[in-house]
Image (cartoon, rainbow, N blue to C red; front, side):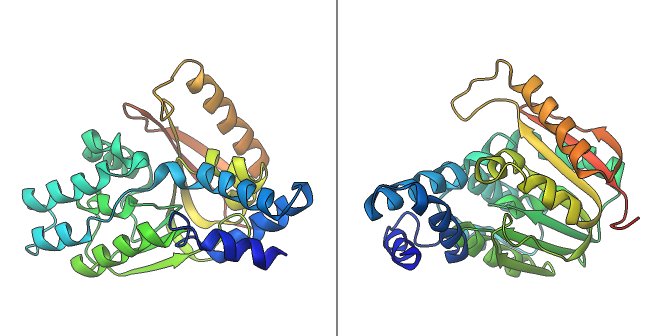
Length: 267
């Protein structure tokens, strides 16, 4: 029955690019609660919308290629990247302060030579503002092929060393080593799938620093009480992970940003 639910969800043009492993996990979780196969399909689609549906944007790969002239600092290329980022709800509000966003993070971590972007969406398209070396390796993970296709074309276009993977972070977190892991607006998405997923992820990351962020406002514009709730969520995450030795804040308008220095696994 799980395979049937996965197949039916994949028939939808909206979700045909989603990692089948994620669909199988969600189907397995929802089938015992569902009244029928139709109800299970609806339940899985509802959870997919919570996980990825509100954070998808149209591909801008051709526009990026047309604007590329061999220099990430060139204004026309940056403008094309910004246009693509504005098409993605999770990165749209970050486009007005990208220089400050990454400069504030690297103040605490140093510019990474190997960066891991978890639940990346179109986040790698902010590379023109990151200030990384040309030989820095970018590892990008997401459950949705749609943004990953754009990300892959972008990283190949600019010649940045990279690996891009379709991966369900709840069931199969990466074990790669890196200097910095970005978990930008990821914790709340993981919480909707599994309340323990963010803790497991943070405990297992083989990185020196993890950057966790939360939106200052909801997608609908609501902000009242959100900052207090997210700061409380961060405190619980830090306590449960048990390996955060220091934490610094690098927040910008519209986004709460926290930089964690992590003890080595087993340290």
